[in-house]
Structure formats: C-alpha cells, structure tokens
Image 1 (cartoon, rainbow, N blue to C red):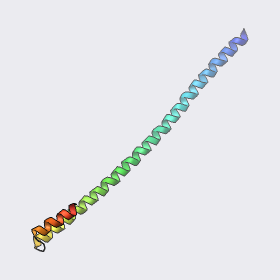
Image 2 (image 1 turned 45 degrees about the vertical axis):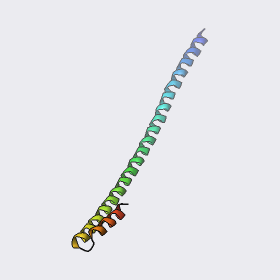
Image 3 (image 1 turned 90 degrees about the vertical axis):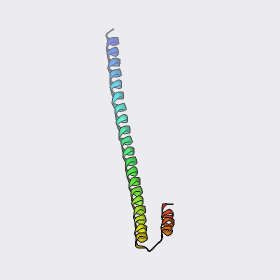
Image 4 (image 1 turned 180 degrees about the vertical axis):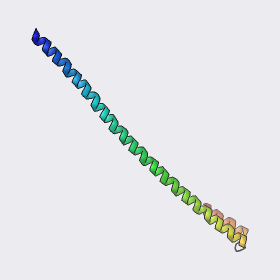
Amino acid sequence: MLNYLVFGIAIIIFAIVIIISGKAISRGIEAKQNIKDKSEDEKIATSDVEETVKISNSNSNLINQINDLNKLKEQGIISDEEFKKAKEKILN
C-alpha cells in the first residue's frame, strides 16, 4: 500500500515538472518569435524610409529641373511653348 502511495506522489510530481517545463519552453519559443517579428518589422520600416528618401530625392530633383526651366523662360532663353514641352518631358 505504501508503494502505491509513493508511486502516486512520484507521478504527480513528474506531471507537475513536465507542465512547468512545457510552459517554460513555450514562453521561450514565443519570445524568440516576437524577436524575429520585431526584427522583420524593423527591416520593413527601414526599407520604407529608404524608399521615401528616394522618392523625396526624385521629387526634389524634378522640382529643381522645373525651376531651372522656369529661370530660362524668365530670362527669355526659351519660349513658353518650349517650357511647356520640356516640363511635360520631365514629368513623364
């Protein structure tokens, strides 16, 4: 009878150890996945920023070209028609 009691207690303790270990392992896996997701989010954010900078640089380049054309038009070097054609060419 004492043997059954000892085995019963041992099985209960073993089950508790397995449950606690399982929780710890699942938390570790979850933490690792969160770190991976955060890293991917940072990469996406970085690529978004780089793309925005490229677009911004492109837009400022277009604006500079149009401003240069406008200066040429104001100086009388090119006509209004030439200005419009050159502007359309830059924008397309």
